[in-house]
Length: 230
Image 1 (cartoon, one colour):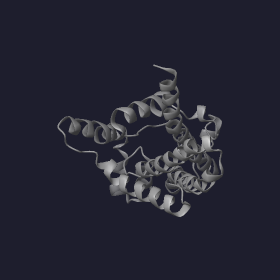
Image 2 (image 1 turned 60 degrees about the vertical axis):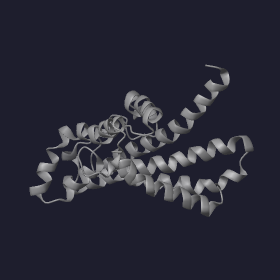
Image 3 (image 1 turned 135 degrees about the vertical axis):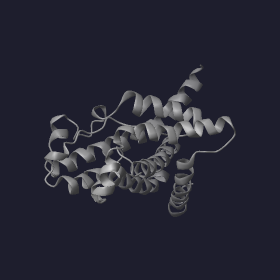
């Protein structure tokens, strides 16, 4: 690999990795912080109520797998180390579980809004830095929206599953909670394996991608229109 090709690869990795690391780090830290405010200090004692990404990053799930998937399929998917929460130590376990779960996606929506506002700074930056910063913001908006939407799927162990278990009546909440041990396997099958199998037969089975693609493109289009940065 020549030096220009290597430099281009590093640049592509940076505009993907930096927004993802910020989004995932703040997402996980938010879970731990809200759990602490609701009475459970488990995450604090394990050093997870922090903005240090090294405390949250899973080498395979946060870095290697998302990059491999993105360059191979165009689909961005990853995960961090789950923040430990002892729901029995929460002040009001069922209610507080909902707030702890909502904290992560809420932070991602906030990061998406902040990233959108930062587009106004692009024209004032040094020319050599503008395009790199612009692409970082694009991926930050897209990744934070996707991370929030993905985590609100009502299937444990995702945040949306925790919210559903917390607000549904017992007759529905208990069976849903029991699916947690299979949740990650179900998600990998539906979100990754099914689209890959479909692609082998020239069939587009990337349902989640189609659901979020429209809103992400609309958001980026509106940001471009409002800020005048295209």
